[in-house]
Length: 125
Image (cartoon, rainbow, N blue to C red; front, side, top):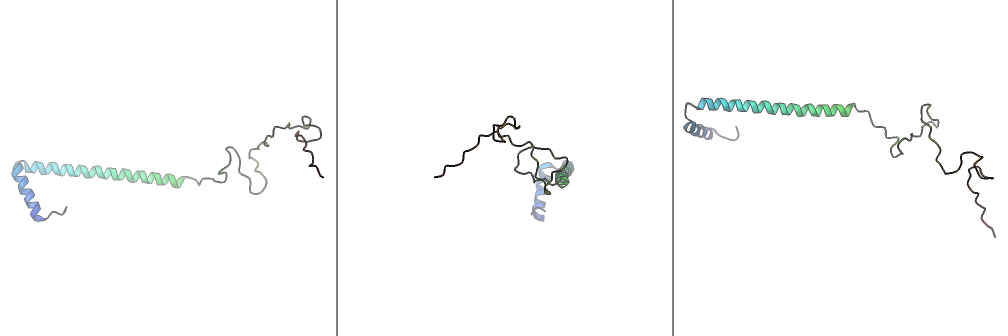
């Protein structure tokens, strides 16, 4: 026990007996026993509390659904491209990117469908 042999234990008991006296020795042993019992109870409660916290944490991790990483790196609100080539019925429709050009043919410049000015062909020769 704690690396203390019989002789060391006997010397400690004799010193305690001399120091406290035979009348107070039983009370001292009783209070020492109660203190050790309370310490064991407190350490057991702490151990159980830690085990419960670990169990709850592991239960939360196993109950989580796997994270969908198909839209990783895309802008918020964007929808991942469908695999089959046709969008699902409930997929939100994204507007076409705006180029600053009018959306109707009436607002477009003459001769172009997008409203941009036509680029002349390069000169040859």
